[in-house]
Image (cartoon, rainbow, N blue to C red; front, side):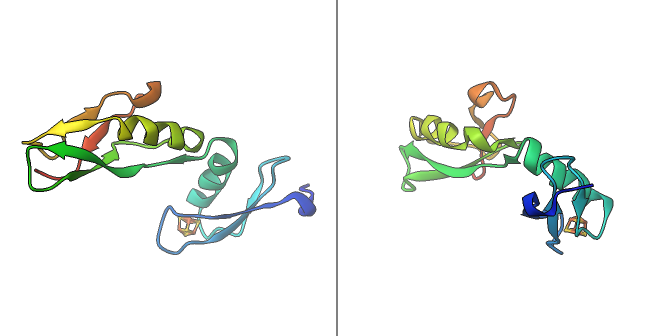
Length: 119
Ligand code: SF4
């Protein structure tokens, strides 16, 4: 049985319904979700929270000075700041193609940072 005083509140972002979950850090029981996906999300959010990172990088040789980029998968939340530092070091040269890999395997996560528009 969960200790209700320690329940963590998590908003499920798997679908637009945005259920308010309560997750026990003791036994990882999840309540408050409307479907099974909320259980997996709530447990993952406490054990290993991950996010898709979006940002921009400098571009040289174009009227546009920044190119939007994102990770092509989720990376651990704890690596977001370090990933931003890596992204801020990059300067692309136009032309840039959508889907072009800007940083392969960022921080050894197995996830690439890719351009999200043509420049
Ligand atoms: S628990 Fe299910 S219904 Fe609720 S937000 Fe998550 S995916 Fe959507």
